[in-house]
Image 1 (cartoon, rainbow, N blue to C red):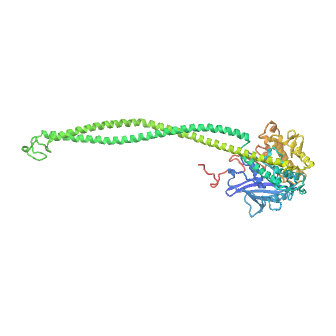
Image 2 (cartoon, rainbow, N blue to C red; image 1 turned 45 degrees about the vertical axis):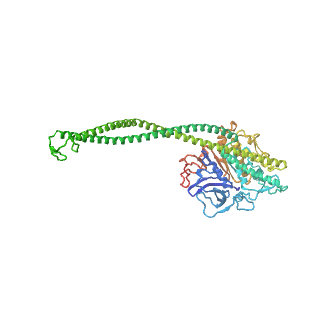
Image 3 (cartoon, rainbow, N blue to C red; image 1 turned 90 degrees about the horizontal axis):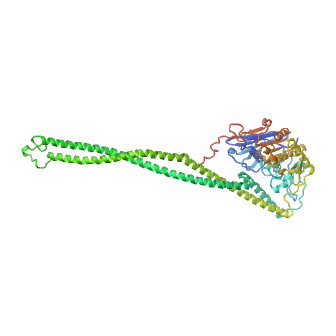
Length: 628
């Protein structure tokens, strides 16, 4: 039996989250469904667990998971599980397939870095399982070789949604320094012969070493920069147009915001004015009410005084009408009375004084009545005006609370979002500028290399017999898929890519590039299996049927063909020593959806399976902080 690997489980574990597991089997495996549900993340995670550097993308559903398990079995029956932190670092190896919890025991440490002088690395462990440990591949024009790493093979069997549509050879990852090694790894797979017999023609000069180091660093920086550019935005021309639109939107929103703030300030000032008038009016009305109560008591007091004085006056009149008798006050006999002298017993004087005092009180009472009347008029005026002021105040307050304030908040939020977006676009343009600077530096270095008679990317002698047989395998697969007009295919050893019906593969639209890249990858596995050559035994492809979803043009559109059906018919018939994992946004045919190794991500809560990670309430420790 041929050597090879078969992926069985991918599992994320965390102390406060249930296991998130995806199971795979021999032959065809399909994961399809809604966008943003974790399908492409499966590809990234498997690559990460096979030695990829990462880092893994972060999103809310991933919170709470701190380790990953990748369960694998070899075609000869050995089962093992790789354990790694989500943050990267070294691996732990455990015997057996584990996916529900962290395996017990210490495990065997495996370094994440390939080292040909040590066997305790993940790369050497995996290469040993597929019979390629200790192989060497050519790395440059000076015939220098390097130890084969499993990462040299991983890029030939794991094709993500970016690589599958790239306008370059399937053997190139955009790193010119690595192109020679990539091609050498391809040659090793289709011929079974490595480059260990090569002897370097001459040692590299210090200048060449420096140039190669710079190129390698630049390629790494360019790769990282391209990843950041992809995450932020699109092409520079699109960003410039977007920036102009954002500037126009900011100007428009700014004017709307200024007008809205002016209306808000005017309404707020009117509300404060009405509130002050309302408070002052209510205070004055309360004061008037208190004064009227006091003046009413004073008026009653005046009435009481007038009644008393009237009683004194009437009593004096009665005394004057009585016959002579001893004085009721001093007891003097009538003959001793001195009526002309003033004394306390002068009844007439007392009556006159009472009348005078009553007159004064009547004047005061009259003045008090006028004051009360004025206050009552003022009270009625306030009672008429205050409800109208209160009604206007409430109307202005409602306008502020229901219209102006929410509108102002919305405009401020919108303005802030547009400003933030503008910042992101400017940042993306800055990344593009930096990327262009890096690429220009790379071009200058390559020009220097060429001027000095050297080349980082050497011409690899690919045997015509092997590449012709490989091209025939690709043609056979394309015909089985009912690829339109698949008449002839050959492999251009200079471009290191397929030529289909006389047309370079990279000249097709992105949808056609995706399906032909897929044909290249699957044909490589088939060719190796049919010719008893070493191969990892699995391929993972993200969005191979892009022509059914986002064709570039009519020539790139395969929706009028049955390639979608024949593609899956072919993959269903694969031998069990092959494994293909397809990630797609488009729904496969019903016969494929019914397969036990076919999983749909719905993206809808309550409709299983929602995605790779189940959406659920996080623990308080993981819940995102509330916005201020």
